[in-house]
Amino acid sequence: MSRSLLDVRDLVVRYGAVTAVDHVSFTLEAGETLAIEGPSGCGKSSTAMAVLQLRRPDSGEVRFEGRELTGLTEPQLRPLRPRMQPVFQDPYGSLSPRHRIRDAVAEPLRLQGLRPTATEIAELLDRAGLDPSYGDRRPHELSGGQCQRAGIARALASNPRLLVLDEPVSALDPSVRAGILNLLADLQDELGLAYLFICHDRAVVRHFADRVIAMRDGRITSR
Amino acid sequence: MTQSASDPLLSVRDLRIAFDGVEVVRGLSFDVHAGEVLALVGESGAGKSLTARALLGMLPSDAVQTGSVRPDLSTARGRRIALVPQDALSALSPVHPVGDQLATAVRSVARVSRAEARARAVAALDRVGIPDAARRARSYPHEFSGGMRQRAVVAMATINEPDVLVADEPTTALDEERRDQVLHLLTEQREAVGAALVLVTHDLDAVRRHADRALVMYAGRMTELGPVRDVLEHPLAPYTAGLLACLPQTARGRRLPTLPGMPPTPDALPPGCAFAPRCTRATDVCRREEPEPVRVDGHQVACHHWEKV
Image (cartoon, rainbow over all chains, first blue to last red; front, side, top):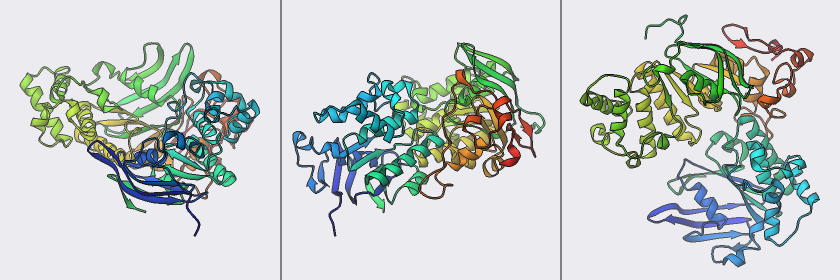
């Protein structure tokens, strides 16, 4: 059996006396969508943040593309970060209001010391279903759905294998939500992306995910 | 409540709301009946929140309202009509005990003694299911859990037994489980005090489960109005049908149907029916004339081609 793209074992995240994530284990294969569902406070977003090493777990292992991440220092993580990218719930909150969309999309590449061309940025926007002319605008000039597309273009910029999608459609109107879910499905088919999909909406989860794990009080209650 | 169905609590006629000469709500007429749950449904920007605010007399100061809302309950706000706020934490004062805030709400509309107001506050907290209400009335909002705060604001909105409750996206920020709890609480409490509920939401699932009638809005106009079962199970307007089709639970296959394009902005409306540029059934008449609502079996629809849906 081949190695999983992501292998999480006995993950524990604590905030003071509260154990937000309590010995959570799962695997995710390339090209697959695994959803984590559960009510507010069940630990699903904390799990996502710990997978991305944006919040270092208190114990447990996060193995991504065969490398154990939890023991790595930030400089050691830096070359791996482009391979796993987050997309957040609030499309306005996750893009700087002062930056034009094209700068926001280019940022992950600049952080790697690359200087993407205008054509490359236009291609990324186009791939996310946004007219490249939106590159000149700022987030407040875009609708919620367009902003979320910009966030996805930005996540795609560094050529990731894994997207961690934290409630990516929860703030959107139904028709806009359908468009974003279709985009994510197309991108997965084209690019073979794996998705860790955090969502509290069961109808969306059932529609979109290959596998689902349910969390409550920091623990996996069903899979 | 002994009003008959022919005698609405509220009648809205040709309601128009404009900002800087740009109409955002464009001629809306509907009734609110005693004891019913009426959902205002539509995408962001459809004008549903402004419509709800107009019922309360809580429009922003730069809004220009024409048309009529009868009777005008805005002068009896808190007594005959009340808002259930979306964010329970910011709706309560952090520096006063919850019971005091409820008692103040009572005394703002009724000449009763402090003791009587206090007793009503405790009774209201008890009614919404706060355990040990007499003691908890002395607690501050930060000492309540999120769920208890939500209950407290529902108690506040219903304490003077209004005729109409208005809830603007009461559950948007909540997960599915909490959403159902809040809607259940709202509908239960509305029943307890005999109020009608005007529920503003873009959550069609909540409408299906909790509302009696639905008013679907698009670009500031009524698209469709009728009993929830009719509107959601047998929509007559292409917009309603399109909105329902893109829900994950009703779609087949991995790709969801979507509505092409985006809703128009109020200052750049297309001629004729505002939905025509996104509508697969649009013909020349749709691009020329705005459809007026027509009655079809106790259900109203504003579409030139409703027969074809």
